Length: 346
Image 1 (spheres, one colour):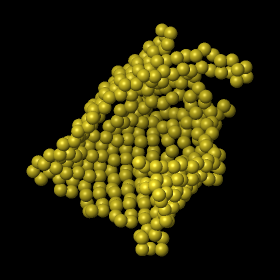
Image 2 (image 1 turned 180 degrees about the vertical axis):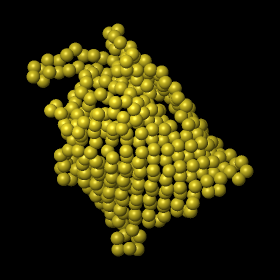
Image 3 (image 1 turned 90 degrees about the horizontal axis):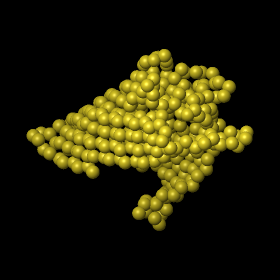
């Protein structure tokens, strides 16, 4: 449930929102190992998992002239239990946290808005991670604090946004590569900073390029470990550069879209091992750029409905990421893929 009440206090307008969320989840997971040479399978290990989580939040969106100020707080309570079937080990986690936030925006002109945000987020220890808890490896929840400063522009033809951000994790959890069963540990504080940007331009209906829209996004992120033996090295599986570019063209019920996504290389372990080991468990993951295309047709006899055909990975680029669990090694990504999809709105 969520409830919002608008109040007028003097020259200010307040939209006060309060809400509550509840999650109850029960599940189990089973694991076993098969030796491919002989086909022999090990005994199956089963864990039963239970999660009960509560969240209460309240915020106040305050409008004063050209200012928009939204303070808020969210309280979370999360209880998790993991029991090995057959009377085996039991793991439990109890977490609660208050998560404050503050968003401030100033409407400089009808087209231009500048803003600044401060938010906190909370990541509890996950079910499968609970197995890693021990006296020498006590897992703690992840806490992230994010600060952003940016500006947005929007008029009839151009939409653009740029944001600089700084995010600090306390006790970030990572999986240790190449260990069976999967083992996780807190690597301590990590610091993530960067800039993200987006731009979109739509040509005027009166121009020769009417119906054409160009767009691009770019993000630069520097994610660094701040403690432990690997202090100063990159956080695993973070690309410094990611971007997407594309063009859309609409004509008489048809929409054509060509786009490209790119990510730079990344490390797969906290030690930032560059050269791949013989079993491919660790090593730098190369960057990749992919191209995609799609054509969609809006059905004239069915409003808000369309049929689309498309191709992902047009050039059939062969690339991979890396697995760090019990099946460690290269994980081959999808090759060229054709698809057909439909959408119908009642």
